Length: 48
Figure: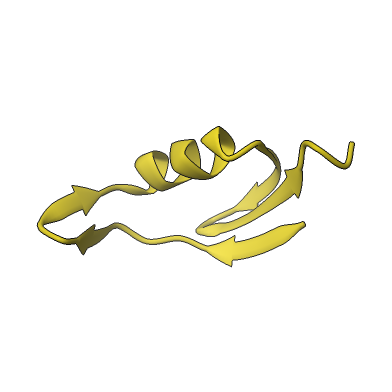
């Protein structure tokens, strides 16, 4: 399980908005299970 606060950011010249970051985490086989404002909770799909 991952609990993370996300914000728009830039890394190596590439801008990421929150939805990009959520998509990247989901692509790593995590499932979004809860969200409140900028706080997100992801569960590892391999465990479920």
